[in-house]
Length: 580
Ligand code: OXD
Ligand code: MN
Image (tube, rainbow, N blue to C red; front, side):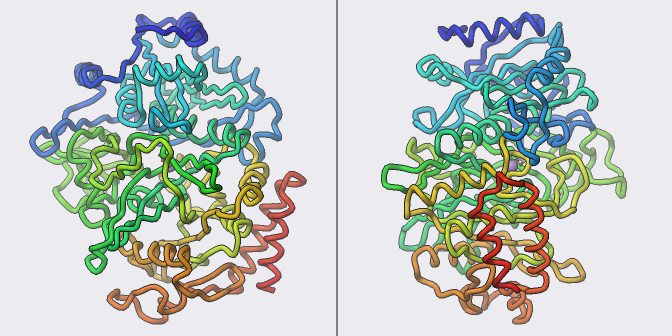
């Protein structure tokens, strides 16, 4: 296989000259190729088969122990002008970045195979989809890209027809944390990644293309690339509303996207369209429509059990690649909170020792095709996407943010999104559990200056008056002893119902300084074990805490200087004045 696209052929040759691989393989995306790659990886020790009776076609990959998460401090946006990347990103001068990377790439694939992976982000026949080509020396990347994207021959054909593609070059290099960089060149639609095999750093279609590069392109072309799940909520009457929801990494997007309604609401149904990324376009009628650019899930494993996420739990019993979990004595995958079996080896492949840390790494992952999910929506493949009724932002906050509140307008909703803050998780290296600002859950993923990003969000209000309503949720409030106040998981359906009722004008709300809150009986909790005081504190605000929050948030916004949109500042002042 090779290509009719001259630019692609020339680039592949240029990279081969630089990296000097032993051979070059163009990936066709076939099942036979996937099976061959699995065999190859088993034979060289990169994968091991799991129990084929309990987990047919499931494999375990153990990564280098120093390569288990995204590396935000080593991730750069290399725009011509530093201000375009903004203080929300690390920046490097493009020529310097290329020189640094080319030094690392020089001869790095000697003795290795170079794989050329044409892929399409989004349904292959959607006008909203975008293609890319990843060149990599990692067989692990090839098999993961096969599950996570539409990869191979069809994508190559689309590239040959369209003539454009995002260029992604990846090498695992020496897996040396001191020689690890993830560089983005948004003006050139290109990505250079070196020294890591971890999904978020190495599967270039995902965070690098579908968020960082795509967010830049989206701004220029009038759409949005967001860190959002997409779900359909179907009522017993058969009406389905679509919701897009942004939460920081490892805050339950996959669980929400696959939620199984509690017994009392068993006639309701949640359909999954995506669990991590949404591309939002406005159609001719002024409706915001969403597609999921991905074709699979790269989800956090620990905590997944029959109660927290039955769909995912069942989904990953076959045709799944596990990364950095433990195993049981009979070679089934094992992780903390699986609630079944016991660990015999840990994620480093050593015998498991009680008390010597978790068996599965807290950021261990499953990779699986979306078609394995029994709640996968038939509209996930629709070229035109689905019309979005509500946008939801959320973070992991022990205190402050109520269970749910609604923005008073689109512009106010943009302020709420910009104000998202969350406790950090194991999805990125660094300290866990520290509250940090994570606007729209895009702190690690927005490929340009947040001030320009918020202007772009605000500009949608000038284009239509039929935008979705915007909400904020917080499933993670705790009492002083660290107990969660809200049961979460399936019960979150009750909150989604309120959101849809509000979109339909069917439920009254209480106006507060920060937005509309549910009335005490607005969400049905009669059968839940929540005492009235707890419930009140979940759906009300503490003015003192919010005054402090608005002051800190204001300082954060001001740090963006003159580029900060005036409208956002005004909205901030309005809310602050209501709290004064
Ligand atoms: C992810 C992340 O893997 O956000 O989706 O880190
Ligand atoms: Mn994510």
